[in-house]
Length: 322
Length: 205
Image (cartoon, rainbow over all chains, first blue to last red):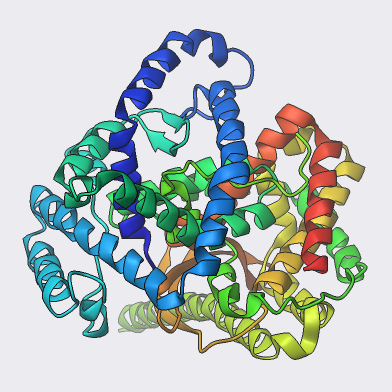
């Protein structure tokens, strides 16, 4: 719902902590050979060991600081204020969207996004109300990282940045550009505004983070995969998915299947059908309103802004021992 | 003359043969779509009755829906990738068993209530190697629609879902990364323990 504005917040946060980030990136390149050795399984994640450490750190920061603050914010703030805050930051991000529309030569879309911005800035009281949405103008999600992708810049390595969370090497210059182009970066008073945007982002990511908690066996890998796939989906405007390499991979594996395996596995299904049913649920009342956002078994965390969470809010594993 | 008749017969056979092939293909496609449609209908139905059914009620209802529409044994095999060959037969069976229970449990947990969601079929396409992809989307009131692409493979005389791609995120790819990572880092027993823990958590919430 609010991923685009979260993205903008993510970007602002990136700017604030730019020096930190760059410092870490340089640091990472330095220790690349050291961390590559044993368990680099994924080619997009050559620094997995290092990234996992940062991920664990972010997770703690989230658990001790970001989540409590965001929870309190949600408790004390009326819903309409929360929505207004989200809409406000989201609207400022529209300028970025228009710029990147143009940079990607999506001129028709840039026109629509411009009308959207104008409508919300005027009728929508400086962006507090999303009027454009109610007349069917959905916000497009464009940022400079996607523009770089369109221009042919390769994605680069996956990195987990302290406090900020996942990013790819392509995402770093993208974030710098987007932050520079976003008025929220310059809105005074800067510190409270930035703080509010961070809290707002963390609060909006709650559903997605809870989903990762529940669904992932390895939250680090889950976050990484869904982040990379989702970014790729955005960069290609959804055109890459079914024609992707994965389909071919799977096809190839299926061809490798031998009948014996199939038969054996089939006989197992009998066991599955007769499997013991887990105990009944307690139907938590709180799930009623948020349930449907979390219903999507494979909803990318980004849908709720998880991976763009400037607090670096990593999901806390639910008792998953590491 | 006789030759002409023979040619005509051959031609007819070719046309008929072609037609029946096309017919079979058409049948196959609609069969794949039928599987997805039926599964989505059952899912929406469970969501509508979600509260009343409770977790175990939803689990019971979805057990058949999921096993009849998904090729769970094949999915379980794909998500562990090359590691599959390294498992003993008992381990393979155990994996398929817990994986199937996890799949049903996660549906039962996540699709628990209803606020006007609808699935809509968009298009159907054949993949290069004989699979079918059904493109559809879930409309959620007051929210952006979510794209659901189902990849199906023929199994016997029917079709089964092998992968679901939601808004560009492939469930199979996601799980494969997770499962192979855990197998390589922590081993088979840890994987099974984690899956069981997830099933437990789903049943409690």
